Length: 365
Image (tube, rainbow, N blue to C red; front, side, top):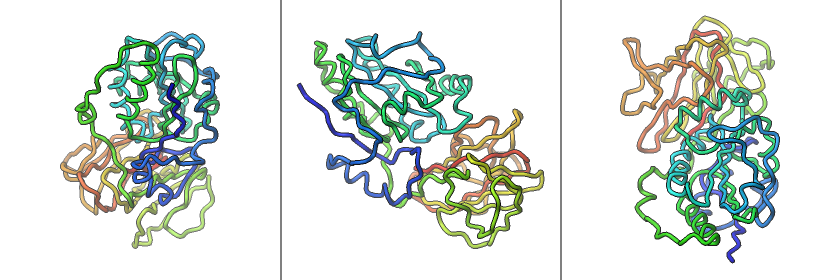
């Protein structure tokens, strides 16, 4: 019987701790060689009995499930959260695995574990599951209880459990979907299911994300994980501050213009006068987790290098009118802002007159 004892880590996952970008600059090359990365988890459970689900606030797409009652099946747990770009990019692959293997002795369960407070609400999770077209079971782990039992620090994170209830493989981050499929097939074969021939073309159906060296790391705006702003001003968290843009901008450092207040998870625009957030970044794709306290949509004008975003570089959430390119922030979630085919460096400026626009984090790919 094979024992899979390697924790695989592919492209840099979203982390429950803040890590400088340089930590992950070499991850692609290491994983390509099959090298194990030590210390990436609080605890590796490979070779141990899978913990029972605990502290859940509900289930979607299924009656309640338990690890004990799933004995006899191969179970893949996908720990995710709907505002994490790494998780969003992995969802098409999870849905393909569900489509390919569901109906036999295999169950895919998405364990939704929040990064931000707004992601704890079951109704928000249900809305995201519907928006992404997820048809497999989803556990709502709003207090991160099951997440902690499985020793997690990262989104996304996959844990593969064999038919006897033992953890056999663990993986953090995006990628390695072919390897994931191989592990599933090996464990299904142990249950007596006939081995199927692998469709090598399957891996080419979906875009496989590859981390680009020198990509801007995830940048948080709240006091819990912020590395500060480039304005060079003294400010007190929780108090309204007028930020002055120095005019010269370093890469990977956010700059504020106008009146803003910083809270633990986000920074919020604090006046109806025009203000902005500016960031010079390097990546192919740029995203931001944005929100507002009110239910009405908030307009955010978007400039790339001082101009409206041209359609060939716009993300899925960008709209246009006679005034230029903009976002409508109607709910707290991840917004897809810039998409380019190649790695490029740009200044991204988000401009608003709304007195409740919140920026939680920037993410890049």
